[in-house]
Structure formats: structure tokens, C-alpha cells
Amino acid sequence: MGEVAVACASGYMEFHDVIPDWRDTLAELVSWYTDILKRQSFVRSSPD
Image (cartoon, rainbow, N blue to C red; front, side, top):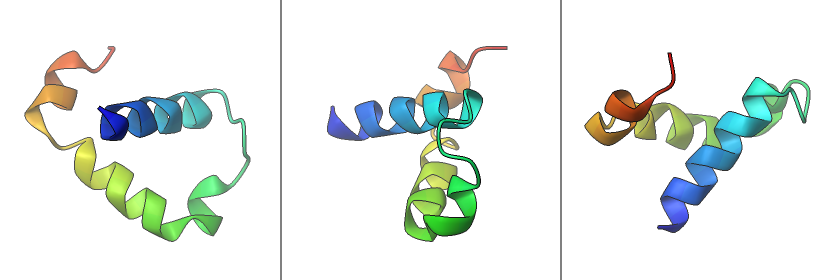
């Protein structure tokens, strides 16, 4: 459940540009976030 919460928060942060250039400073989070977005559950539930 925690992973889902972190992924959703990361998506919100990215969409609303809460922390500009967060992808440049949080490399480990970006790597994890990129991987989790490839899961079927995230692919199927992604907003269009």
C-alpha cells in the first residue's frame, strides 16, 4: 500500500510541478517511479 501512495504522490508532484526539477535531484526515486509506472496495474489505471 505504501508503494501505491508514494507513486501517486510522485505523479501528483510531477503533474503540478510541486518541486521543480525533482527528476534531476532525486535519481533513486525517479528510477523507482519509472519502474513502477510500467506495472500493469498502473498502466491500466493511468489517466488519459
